[in-house]
Image (cartoon, rainbow, N blue to C red; front, side, top):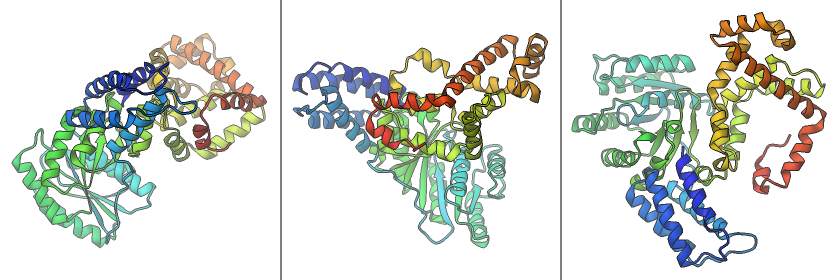
Length: 457
């Protein structure tokens, strides 16, 4: 998300190099570019106008102090304004009520409500240690109830059974009664969507709201709908007392216009952003971190949090001890590393959070293809335990057998062996103290604020 906006803003700021201070002339030219960048990112026009006017007013005549260049001074103003537009502070889910706390999901068909219910249920269960029950009030979409049941089973949360013969309000009443009976902490309610906003849909969701009296009413919106996200959010906001917004499918949207528009148009905070189909792909929306990502300054804090939450620490410690003793880096070790990376959303997701991500050449970004990881893991799984531990034995006939077992080619296995050799050399250097030397060399090049957020060790 935000790739195109980040790239355009980066180019714009570079044009200010060599200027002594931010003046009316250079601000005027720069803000024209910023306006175009926001419009191309599909940000709603009223939001663009307000944003540009505010940045111009705050930046005009600002002195460039110390080692700051005019570009850096403008980045500071733009960063602060982006944070303001997106909500200033992180808005946590409010569950401070007599259990069960009811969370009602609303939105158009295809926005990702059902998947988001599954993701939110998993997050509440694993991170907040809540007893969660989920229910589907969608009696129109084929297999909607079954889809939610499958998700509930996969994350081991309570599913309240419903059927298409019942009315949505009846389902809601019975689910609420059952949630109280089994002492559930949270009841997540999935609702029906439509292809467009209509009177029937609004009447139904309004009736459900009256029946359940939820503490949270979340509007789920597809990031790829761009400006329409703000318009539909506004329409729902006029019918329902929305408490927040969840933006989904952010991995398929390079523009990010929805995130910049929804908060200002609705006045409601963005609470979560989701990407992909996996049930762990839901993160809290931090306006300051997202602003930093848009401006190419990375999001090291989120990356560190993700590593802490998703890395298998026992495996990591075992691997570190093995490398410290100078033992060989075999293909089983390589598979473990690839699987850990896949758990964190893959290389592309990690690159996006690193400082200077916007400056990484497209050719390098294309090489960070997570499908390659899947192919490499498949090849390693196709090997015998002996072949994984002693890669040197893998020759002609073995290569053919391994490639056939993974449904790939000998060329693919040659590529894997080459990459393993490169990683093996790197691990050998690290075991001899190369890692500490590398970090000392990087210390002078990375900003102190970033290093301060990196975990010790």
